[in-house]
Image 1 (spheres, rainbow, N blue to C red):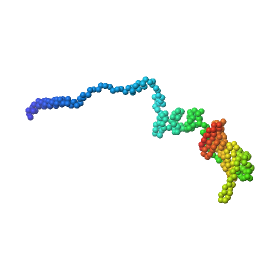
Image 2: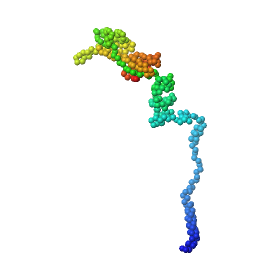
Image 3: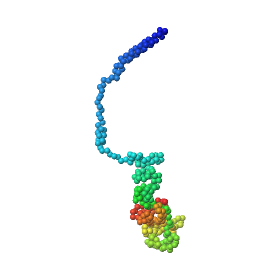
Image 4: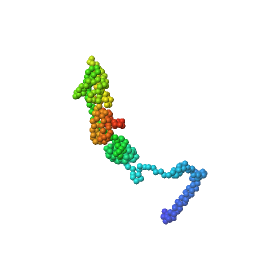
Length: 309
């Protein structure tokens, strides 16, 4: 041991030499096995240096397209301004692209077409052209809401305020004889008239055109229910008067109001009236019932329904 300590440097150097010699042997043996390791990876197949056939059809199409002049495509968008969006019910809606209506039932395209303010929450009830008709009324009539000369019919502003069914003023009172019949006014203010079939009734526009004798028997009791038939000599409408009974007038009264100015009219069925916006135009009340009325513009034949107020 003392000798190793005294010869330490030489012993260490000898050990390193032995290690280096062993490593060199290992490397030499691995190098000798390289050809065997790569033998299975060598291929006798010759290299293919040919290029694949290019897609000539696609190239020809692109060449043709490049030869054509450029074409601009119209767009509602702007290069400098972003698309407009409105937040409604938690959704972002672009009115220029349609989609969910911002002011139903009017589609967004109609609002954009006339340049209306689609962001206005009161748009439907606004009057863009000050012609006394709202945007929704102009839409329903398919008129231009920005042009006061393009508006719905003034008659669309008429409403039925009241329906009045009055008692008919005449009453079939009795049978004088087989050919003569008595007619009175229900208030008995006029004299009794004795009439035959075909004769006019004084102070009215009615005449007697028929007599229908009728009886009914109930519990052995015979009741006379004969009828007189009158005709309006102007309208040619007929009304039947049962013996000793009152009936409603064939011409009820309609109370019609003009929403544009508050003007009110009391009009008999088949009566005529004019509104202040069209003083030269006559409207005729051709039909009326509780809850609805129908008028007709003179000369046009077009019927207009008047809804209740």
